[in-house]
Image 1 (cartoon, rainbow, N blue to C red):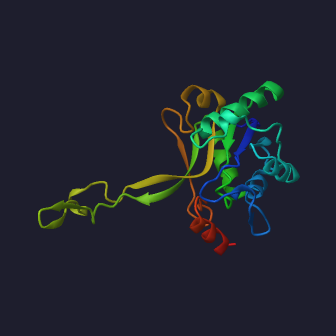
Image 2 (cartoon, rainbow, N blue to C red):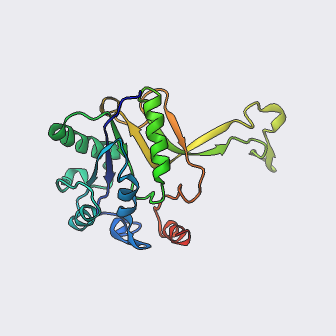
Length: 227
């Protein structure tokens, strides 16, 4: 697809974080955590708006100061621990399209991945455009290596797989790192997940720094250590 497209970037940032209270507005280096994700998406050609969905007035003010759109406080029913990112994203998408017309894609950028680069976002958008708008998900590559897989027996453990009897020993595999999701509105609404139902494209993020996902105080210390 060569034509310009419209992508709505949605950043979910609720107030209730139990492991790191107030993490989305906590300073990471010289700016609040939420600001890192806003700045990574600013100025990119295919992104029509950056919408922060939050239930916290302080996060809303910070986000607006960094140039994001914060049109409302997130409803209470979408602010609990068990609410899915899909429901939050669809709520934001419905509001935006009712106000500003259809978009070609919804990009979810979680604020807990502060170090994703503009270059990787552009790469993900290009994958989306060049592959008939298939969903794109940020991943880390891992090796499916069975050389050192063991199973328990009565005396301890015994090796059950090795390279000679496992044809997939060197086959690459991927784990979702949470840093990047891009999908069409139709697929998101129909299938209620960011991977869609079928083939997806992987945005491989090889940098350990770019892959940091801040969920605990230990993760936070890791993030601070690589600033």
